[in-house]
Each structure stands twice: as C-alpha cells, then as structure tokens.
Length: 580
Image 1 (cartoon, rainbow, N blue to C red):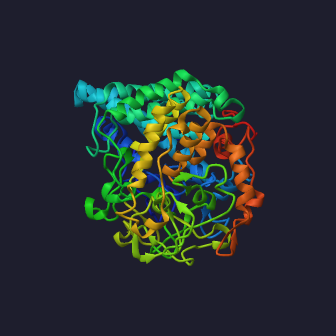
Image 2 (tube, rainbow, N blue to C red):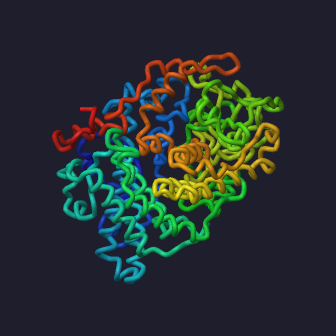
Image 3 (cartoon, one colour):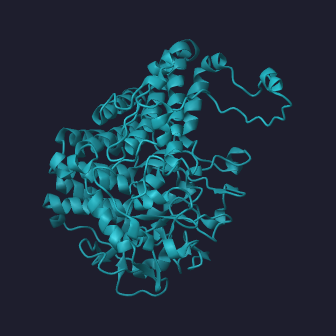
C-alpha cells in the first residue's frame, strides 16, 4: 500500500529553484510538527473527522459509481463512454486492475482516512487522559473507532481482499509488510464490528440534529448493516443467497435496529423533504456526512459535497456534467397497477410520464422525487422545467437526470466556478434505510407480518408525498398499501421488500450492493443489459453500448485490487478471484 506520511495536508509549494543545492537547503513552511500535532489529541480527532467529507468525484466516498453506475438503476452519463474511467463499471467487461484508475485513488484515499484514525488513536493513548480527562478520552477513542470502521466498511465492501492496518501497525511503521489475505472476509467484518461495538458501548444516544458526530444510534445502524451483509454469505454468488442465510446474524440485525426504532428518529412526513438541504439534519437523518454553504460557515467556498460534483443536470446548472443518469429500467419499476407494483411485467413495455398528459399508466409518487424527466419541473420548480436538451449525450445515456443529490436550482451552487458543488449532506444512514434492513431480517426470521407493517408505513409516507412538492403529477400517481396476503409467504414478502428498497432508495448508491447481498446480481444485471441496449425515448434510441456489457459471477461481485497497489510491493497482496 502507498505510504501515508503526513498527518495534515501540507500546502503546495510553488518554487523557482536555481539549483539542486537551493532545494536541499530550503526550509519548508506550512508544515505541522509531528510531535506537536500528536500532543493535541482533540486536534487529531478533528483531523480524523475531516476525512468524512474529504472526497472528490474520482474518489467519491459515497461510492455512487460502485453502487449505482454498476447497477440496473443507473447509466454513467457524461459526454460519452470515454468521459472518466467509470465506463468499465457500466459494462463490467472491461473492468481490470488498472481500469479504471479511479479505483486506485479510492483505495489510497480511504487508507489515508484509516491512517488519520490510527494516528488519532495513538495520540489519544499517549496524551488523551492528561489533556482531556479519562471520560472524554474514552469517548474520543470510541468516536475514532467508529470512523475507522466506517472507512474500513467501504474498503471491504468494494475490494474484499484488504490489509487490516490498525494503530499497532501504525506505531511500528510496518504497513508495508501487512498482507491483504491475512484475514478472511468474515474475520475482517468482525474486526469492523468490534470497532463499531466499542462505539456502541461507549457513546451516548444523540437525537436528530444534535450534531454530526458519531453516536450510539449511528453505531447501532452500522452494526445492523454489518450483520445483514454477513447473514447472506460472503458476497460471491456461489456462497451467497437464500441457501446461506445465518439466522443468528439476522437476529442481531433486529436487536440493533431496536435501538434506532426507540431513539427518536423517524420518517420525515414528506418524502421530497428528505432531499432538500433545509431538512438535511431532520429526524430522518441517523448519520450523515455534513456539508455547509459558504454563507453559513463564512468561508470562501463552503464545505461542499465533492463526491457528487459531476451529477448536476446538463444545461440546468452553470456547470452540470450530467453523470449518474437514471435508467429506463428504474423508471419502469415505479409503475403501479391498482396502486401496487407491476412485479412480473413492469418491463414488458417502456413508459414514461409526460407532464399534463395523464394516461392509463399510473406511477408511484417517489418517481417524481427521484428522477428528473423532460416536461416536468426540475426539483419541483416550474421556472426550471426540463426539456430533452437537458441531456449532454442523449444518444448514449438518454434523457433522465438524478434529483436527490442536488438542491433546487433557485438555491444555486455552493461553488460555481469551473466546477459546481452543492451543500448537500451525504446520508450514511437515513431512518427508512434502517427500517428496510429491519424488515429484511424479519422476513428471513419468518416474522413476515411485522415486516409488512414496516413496508406499508413507508408506502403510506410515499402516498402522502404528493401535495406539497409534486401536485403537478397528482393525476399520474397511484399507490396503495400491500394486502396482508402479500406477507403470508416468504417468497412474496421478499419480493415486496426488495421492490420497496429499490423504489425508496433509488439513486442513493445502494442498488448493486443490495443485488450482491441477495446473490442475484448476475441474473438481474445480465437481463438488464439485454433490454438496455434497445431503449428509446420519444423515438430516439440510446444505450446501444450495453451490447458489450456482461456481469461474470465468481468475479465481478467485487472490484479488483488496483494495479498500483498490487505492484507497489510485488508479492505482498493477493488479487481477488477472476482478476488474476
């Protein structure tokens, strides 16, 4: 793994040097003394927290290229298939250890974050009790363990074979001798669980909007997510799915989600409000990466969400790059008949609503909060109505745009120079996500009716999310609760849960990881690739590049260990299956 030398980012030095001697004699400025930094444990904890939002579109910590572009919910977008390296995620067949190079950036930056956490722990161990007092030190250690587990969860989710580098390794400086096959997938997950468990045991309960710090409820949500992943298997299809379910782990999901249910968090009344910046720390937000606008924090540019800087609509923003494009398959999934999903025939024909022209096809109202479509107001604002011109490369990627990660156009960007960025929090967990995890576990524990109550509560909220923001689509919306009979058998209950998760969490960077967890990625994605290469909108074809797409089980469930990491110290790391 690449060495991580610095604690804080040093300022770049622009120097005109007349000789090598000048360079050697130069005394660097703007460099933090290492021992001085270590003697400030509170500052070291702050530096670890700062990594939560230290993202960029080539290493987005929200993992949108890994969780959405890879799935049937989303097309890459941009100016064409060569725009960024993420085309490999869209079609899978060209994915290799050196393609895209963005994988190496993500690996490196996440391990920078881990290093910050390890150094903060060393500082706390050495200076924490004297400087902060025993109780504050104990809480800070738990917070940093939470942060480290958060970053390791992402690394394990994406790369599978990863080295476990903790504060002991950091203290010894032995990072470059740690193998990535020292621990199994199960063992790595339990190391992550141990960190989250320490946070859960030590940290206080904090209610909605108190602050953006790690707390007991966020740790409970993460523990539930870890156990839910483990409960289905190891992610590879041959050893994942309904034949590999661990009921004890499913029990743990229910236990930890109990804490979230009883915590004061809850469903925000209107689905659309969840994705407006003025509601970003509402009761729906269990844990989120915090952002700010420059007018709020009195800085030059604010603390923007740079993971999503590519994802603004083309021609709508001052600099909209038009990535993260919803698929026709996702739009079709929002179809309803008598208020219920068209489970088995939703893709028999392609459809899309047109503003002011209702027809016999009805839609789940969450479609209009999730997908921007021509003829409809962009993010509820009629003065910014979308047209077919709001697509940068329609011949490849069609005419839809993603709505959730952007504010309303009238609010403007946080930064609008040659790049755009928005002060939109990144949800790590929102309450509905946790409740869907709980429902998933309840179904596998044969408590289907309890799961049905959760899912119908979510559908009730969706039904009540029309008047405030999308009244213009009211005559095209129809949604009903599932009858109790839908939760009388496990197979149908699973179908309801999986459908609800797709609709509720659409374009929130989860879809591929859901398909992988359930062991159905290859059948779902390869069927999608067959359909997607023939999509049309208003007679205009797009998506033909999907003719080259294919998902290979036993290989593509995880991403390859990046080439630069494999060969930085040859022989140290083992490559993931199928990429050797």
